[in-house]
Length: 244
Ligand SMILES: [Zn+2]
Image (cartoon, rainbow, N blue to C red; front, side, top):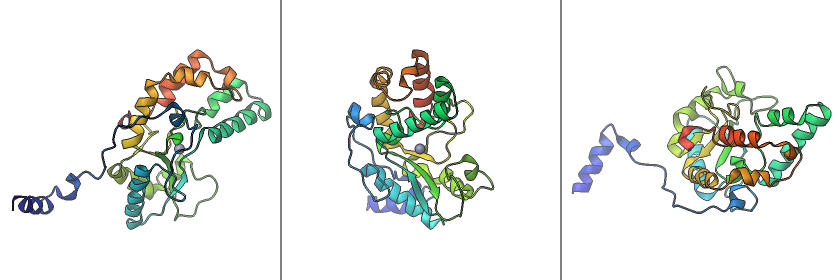
């Protein structure tokens, strides 16, 4: 009797469903260094989704809700391993230094406007996604900030995300906050906080500085101590405070 009247009260009242948590509580799990750096295979779920199970399930829920609101939520990029990130890094490094004649340190600064040092991408975790709306026609690169702004093809989708994504556990990572440093504003990059928060905490507890220093790929010989310290502070930790 008591329970019944409680349900009646809450569903009838203004609190309604909003008072019930939609996000399951993740169990504390230990993540290995190779897992945190994308150097090992992890179990991924969903064709064209490729996320850890819990993040996948939350994504499917969010996609369904977006569909009801008139959007075709599409993943442009989700899980990416170390070796894929290394290929992206080296392709850019070679283009900037050899074709464009940039100095190594300038090339590196340009790469880290949007791309991470291999081993430090949040896309290694199976929790982060770059998303767009598949309905509007758009030409050229889709992951461009202007396309998500007023007048852009993804502006209504972005508004919906601002209002709804966090209900499903997905938080914008690289916000347009003026006090945030590091990577540029990425209106398309969302992270499943219930898993990525503990992953970042565990990654921070390792010696990230030493881990990056031990890697060798094109340009890595130009990483100075000062550069790496700033990169860790500004780029790895320069995220939405909800994810820290
Ligand atoms: Zn991304």
